[in-house]
Length: 91
Ligand code: HEC
Image (cartoon, rainbow, N blue to C red; front, side, top):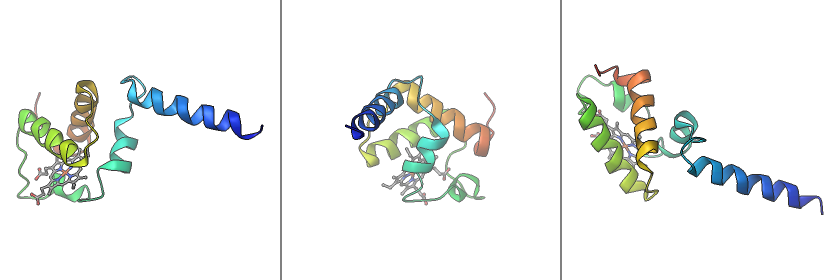
């Protein structure tokens, strides 16, 4: 029965990751958001996003492409992560 605790732990981690509070924008991004483009699209000179509302709608579009259906506060956490690390748009 050595495997049971491991499975339980993974299940709990998955649930926590979906619960908003345990959502880690940085690791989520690294795992799910770098398949189609890398982070250079966020800082290229002709990037398309130039305001926070645009950043949010772009994140929603990419989420829709992925089919993950993130919760609103997860979208918000991702927007915040991208803005703090790449976009640096004024609030
Ligand atoms: C299914 C492929 C795909 C996945 C997965 C994906 N994206 Fe994108 N993303 C795109 C495409 C295509 C563009 C447009 C690139 C371009 O204009 O050259 C884009 C552009 C963007 C931009 C705008 C870049 C700019 O020009 O300012 C942001 C921000 C972004 N994605 C965020 C995300 C985030 C966050 C995730 C993870 C939730 C994600 N993407 C996952 C396809 C994807």
